[in-house]
Image (cartoon, rainbow, N blue to C red; front, side, top):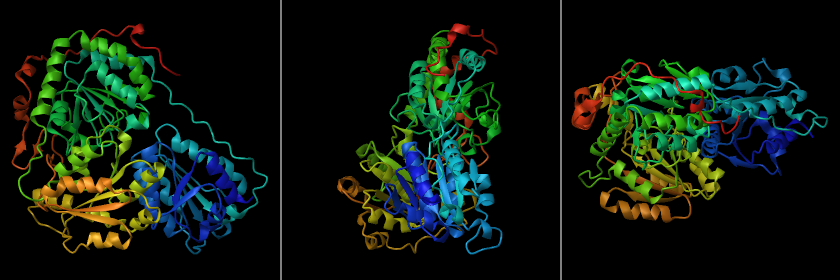
Length: 598
């Protein structure tokens, strides 16, 4: 029983069944210990693929994803995937080999200071220097990855620790995860007082809803209060797309109804969101009339970018459950008529600004294709790369659960889609997993087609090919006077021939009239398939809020929608809603429901 074999048993004790990695010299004792073990190791073809696959596994399941690499370039190739997990709060444990402790600091072969290099992009990292450090390191790594706001933790494991005698070490026992404390009664009362004042409230939901296992509580709260709701990119699916109060995504590529509702509201009830610049646009002009109630597990987010009139730090689900009866009563009572008019106005705007899918011409219209595919595969897990296709998916796919939408949010990492889809498919062999990619992003990690083929993963890849770096081209068209610089991808390879070389079946689609039959054929295939879709290079993502502008200033294919157009999108009943009051009676102590747990 050496350190490497002890670690394999410890991973099993932590509930790990699958890990993603690539072997090399300094991690070889660990790979020797893996041989014949019960752990399933997925051999990717690049360490970045390992990190993104573990990332996708964790996002789809809510469990800790595990990736492994050797020292030096193996470890450095993980860095982008680790950073992505940190910025999107994904629980991961990353294990890297390191040269023996006696060689550290000597510029030995494949030695890098991985501990120092990853310090800014992990919740914590460890460098065990003796075999006796290993039990506490592993316990803490998994506890920290799971606890509170999740994130990645790195274990940099020297080779001599892996081969050291571990026969005296006890069997691994996972550390308990401390429950997130509930919010204080005072904080909840303050939030209810703000709700009591509101005449035009909007709920603004983010990725923290899924991270905090608060999906059911969030949906119940929306149903009980009947408040119009907008979602961030990471929050999509927290409220089903078809829910009548779901106004859609807000922000740079958000829907008009969502953005205009936020800009007009007098109370922004923020749940698990962080006021990201892609959601807020020009922060100083964001929701200018609104007071803010902000619920989050991470106290650092409260007041970080926008002052919170009522900050509520603690377990989001419990906070919503405790406030729900009193919040519903407040919103039915005083100001009930004006709130009803506000809700109707928001829903009217949603209806009148809904996207159209009847684009003229023979070419495939990407929003129409994605909307139809979401109807044909309503329970699919969708993994996106980054670019125009990512925004089209966010706008037009009808998500019913946030764990069905895997996307690189804060980091915006191209190359995420295919390996993340592999991780999701490994987590659930029976799931329908679809990777939506662009011709630029796809080539970032195209080598992972070999992983798809080796394990015969039934991932369906929809490749939207406009022979350009589409999002960069769109910005150069709109904001750089059409000076197109280094966005031409007209020399792309034959993607179908490329996929076939890896043993993956292919389909082609270049005419709108063939779309239905081709999508049906794609989903009918039992194994992996790449669908190559030729789209118009001139097609842009609309609407679009220009950089450093208010979210009211949305551009579309024809003209911007300025602030004064709000009145034309929402009924005249809005004019009857007066200036919000500045005070309200404090809720009684009995207003809060008894917490479900403590």
